Length: 408
Image (cartoon, rainbow, N blue to C red; front, side, top):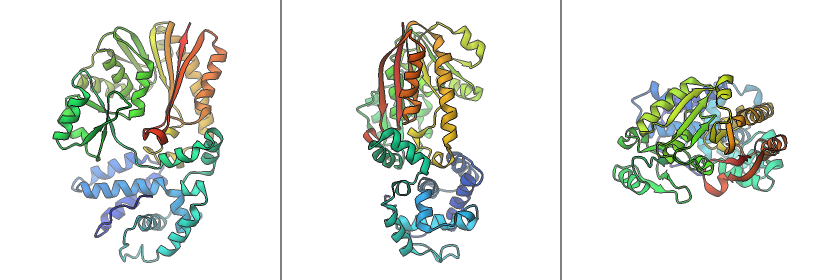
């Protein structure tokens, strides 16, 4: 754990907001980012420092939930009580070198006990790195000795990466424009169009975002369209497009020539994609809702096919730390079935001689290599070309897997 900067005072309204957030996340099963976003909307007068305190400490407690429970010796039977969440926050603040105020909720906290238990926790990986038993077992089984370093990397705060829109500017030009406007960024040399924020800023308020000069997209995610290798004039299908970050990247790579068909089951995501495409100056992206008939109509039509399938999301835990506590082993079994179905059914959209990429944001072999091997066994007209893993430990990016196959 990295000690946070000490504040002169911990303001009670901010501490109350963090506890409220935690109760919504754990008791009401709400997503952490949505809870924090709602808190900020309800309190528009809070400044950047207040917002930073709330976000950092909400995410901090969520990320290190198991370790904090261990250090505080929390009674699992009372875990839903407000007093327990107050104790969790106080323990977290002690672990990060804050001086606790003499509030009624915090006077019973014993810093010596917390430190003693923290030292004990260093000998137990699943407690030290704060993950559920089942996840630690699966990670160890799949990744072996690499699991330790990947776990450690996924407990770091996620960096913010930008993807430069080459239709409107260049990487060097955008870096200068942003730095001159007070948003400090540095080039990511291993990813062609990626810049990294040096300090967190609200980049969505930037005039250059509004002009479509860049999108916010993890650097590892940017490598997936690169791996697919679409060229101007091609017909490309992004069959699990979501809000369309990769669809936009493909449209830009193709220089607005040819067509990108972006598909998803959620209409609101496709609506959002249309807005983003307009801002980016991209007019070769067409959106389609996924239905049985739409897949049938596209059979044997795509030069390139991207299947960025739903997955456990274990490669993006640094961005979504609450997923550690909400995921269940049964979900991984269910999602594996869905992945296999998507790969089998959607691959029919690829024309003969075309290439497709199967991708996940998971680190697990069962969702990655095993799915590709199963598909190739069942589809002898496809051949394996290449695969790539993006390791959070080695890159500082989110974790991804991608495999390229060709239909003969």
